[in-house]
Image (tube, rainbow, N blue to C red; front, side, top):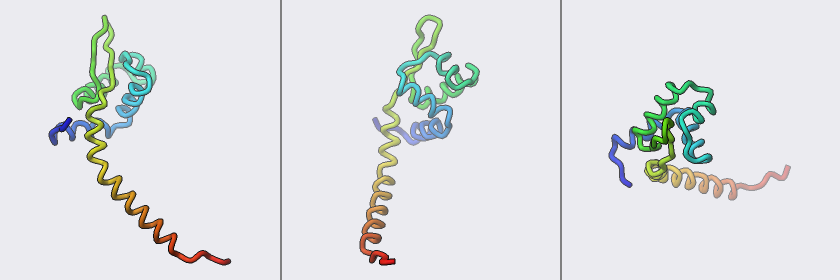
Length: 113
């Protein structure tokens, strides 16, 4: 899935908040959850949590389904693949730097003290 710059901006903005990252973690670990279960876990009132869920929904990170009177939320991980793709060159960069550091340290004489 290739996203536009605006889509990527929404995903990164959604991930910038710790509460929203926690909601994603809960949905990943526990599967689809009703709003109340998510609110109970975070000791947050439902209206406040609903604002966070709205941001996650607009970023495409969660989907919402009505089940009777409840709204069930489910993780939609596809946008996270785009984040991983974006981060991959930085991961390669740091791995290269650490490899270089390892070589440098490996070539230094040991202290005999």
